[in-house]
Image (cartoon, rainbow over the protein chains, first blue to last red):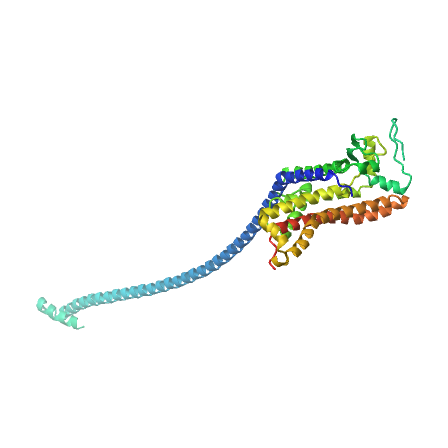
Amino acid sequence: MNLNATIIGQTIAFAVFVWFCLKYVWPPITQALAERQKKIAEGLEAADRAQRDLSLAQNKAADDLREAKIKSAEIIDMANKRANQIVDEAKEKARDEGQRLIAGAKAEIEMEVQRAKEELRAQVAAIAIAGAEKILESSVDKAANEELVKKLASEL
Amino acid sequence: MAESNSAGFTLPEYENGAEYIGHHLGFLKYGQLPDGSWGFAHSVEEANAMGFWSIHVDSMLMSILLGVIFMGLFYFVSRKATSGVPTGLQNGVEFLVEMVQGTIKNTFFGKNNLIGPLSLTIFCWIFMMNLMDLVPVDWIPLLAQVIAQDSHLYFKAVPTTDINITAGFAISVFILVIFYSIKIKGMGGFLGEFAFHPFGKWALPLNLVMEIPSFLAKPVSLALRLYGNLFAGEMIFLVIALVGWFQLPLHFAWAVFHILIITLQAYLFMMLTIVYLNQAHTKPEAH
């Protein structure tokens, strides 16, 4: 073995290189590594979050859809009910109206009949008077007879 | 041995395998020569005669060059590092950084901003140095010889086969371990671990005898493990290089196996550094 001052030279060189590495090489590389690690971790987390958000959104969309379906079914139901109601009401009204019309017509007919009867009576009275005049030919007290005939006519 | 003449460069020649290997194991060493002047050693005897105050120029040159290459690469990437989708080079660098971070996270339970860059530097730098072992054993020395115009130039291409380089790492780590032990546990706590562990205060001498060697063994084992593995690998490459044409499949097989070794040794050095520093940051469990 041949130990000599090379040991000292090597020790100094070693110290210089380690110092250089400590000062200029190690920090930027480890920093870049740490930053990349952080970036990747963040990226993965973001991906996870996005996945979660997506599934949440999908669930919500499905829920909304289901709700909308239920609501629309309700609305349709209600509309049907309402339509039936309207139809029923309309039917009712129509029936009432019909009834009313029929009643009106009947009343009018009744009235027509009454008037016809009146007219008939009047005419019967006139005819009866005329007939009686012709029968009697003689002058009978028109007023007294008319009274009589009217009485007769009302009994018809 | 080839003569290097002034007219030009001739390829180095070796009389036998022993000389070939011996030459490849020599360092380009700068220090005080026997005649008192300073300069490069020209022979093993001259090299051995130099005292402690000499330096392996080839090891330092390759070590710093490789360090600059990998640091430059990392610096280049780190300046443009984005937290977006990484491309090519950034991917590779991030892979390494994440590997180091993961290892630290599993092994180190204190809090320390130095440990990351320290581990990264240790792993990458040692790996780069070890990687030089996979370059065919003659290429880099030959290149150095051509540049120096000296066919007898010693040049060792793999810094981690130099005990000084691995010891430099180990001592740095050792100093850090002591520094953080004292910083975290205080001087009393640090010394108390030697005195009152593992057998309690009534067995203090025994504790000292057990703990101090095991503590001192840490840097030694760190340095020797890396050095030994790489030196042995280098040696086998050199032996393989001696067998003529058959070296190609052999070299390939050993190189493939060696890929595992150089990575493993670099990783092991980093791992043990983290473990030792973790021990420095945590109190031993009570007995």
